[in-house]
Length: 195
Length: 361
Image 1 (spheres, each protein chain N blue to C red):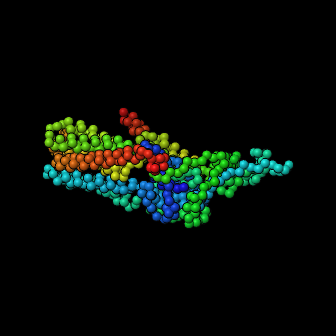
Image 2 (image 1 turned 90 degrees about the horizontal axis):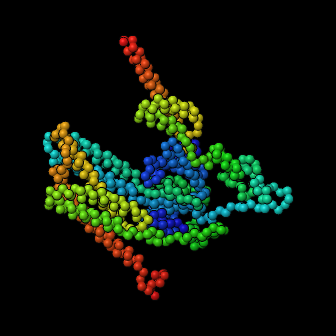
Image 3 (image 1 turned 135 degrees about the vertical axis):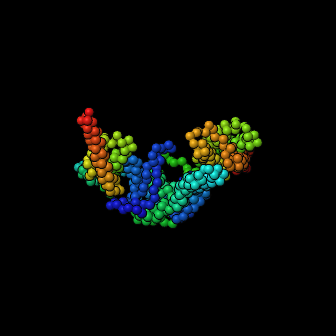
């Protein structure tokens, strides 16, 4: 049932929940295996939905010939056993599940996030290697910081210090450019006066 | 455990998940515990990818101890030692006009960096691969890449999973193995699980190993010939080609048998050869660097036309020692390879009169 991850040879029963690294009988690699009751459960078989028997009985919104087994917790439509999706105790229809995932309402289904705090910090720091780019990226950084200040960050939660640092750096870059432009213009006019 | 958040609590350990064999960047991985699931977070540049493993679905957690940490300890220790010895040798035989403290300080810094990395690697403990299995997938958890954090995480997760699933009765797995699992109607029957490693993995034909050790022998013989004929400049061409060939062959011999069974002895000899070859390449690099530096100090403003390694202090002795080691490794490697090829050939040929089960009537 459970095989050694290295040699794929079957592991004998004494290996399970031994709370210690034991050498595999096949390849001698030290292995520790912790098994749980879910391992012994047979694969869950989904219901196909029961056919309607009595006239006037509630039927599934998507399959009118099937008997309703639950109502969608989001839209309230009746669902048969086939359409009823159990999401951590919530009953949802396929359409609500899809909409919820697309709009980010179902946090359990969220599998990717763009981190605007990291993006703003990268945008502020990376162009400093070739500093000419900062004339463009500094305003872009400020835009990202202001536009996405209240956007959701990491799902595991972290502070917004990156955004604050990015904002400060971007402001300093802009101030620096203002000084550079001022000196160029000032030097040009000064030279013109002397000539 | 580190920082706590509103919903998730971080589990100890850090690691990286490579995106492919040659990847520009690897995702930073961490593991978090939520109310009813474990959350695996892969952070790459400005994106985070999440995977949830609900406590009710987790079938098993496996920790497989690996030799990666030990391998790196050997590499780092060797590099630290070789660097220290080389710099000491150079300063020991160096002309008094050259500044010894500066060279020693540089050598000490390089060796110190290797030593610091070695200490950190040692303190992190043995390496491992931790896998989490559910009914539909087996996920490697790179953040639990050392046995210490992996076992600490397991100690935290086990009670939480058992709280959801209940504890497994003693002997339940054994009973379950004896009873066939009910099949889903219409599903194809799965192939039977193999029982031994040899049934799954093929056998290496030993050709790469034989070529590796033969190349090592050729280099050793050429080296010995060079010691008796110092004007034989053709040696450097042979030596360079053989060093590069040995590097390529040892990498091939170590990487290719992932799906084959190679005896531990032969694999060990290949690893030793690979490390030894790295040391030789590193030594040549250091000698080249030092010789150029010494030349620049003695002849400011001039560039050396070529590097005569044999004119350098201590090189002859080290070269002879390297040739002896090469000869030993080459001979031992060829013998072990031949024994392995002979044995595997004998095992693969069925005995006359043996039936399908391999029992002679």
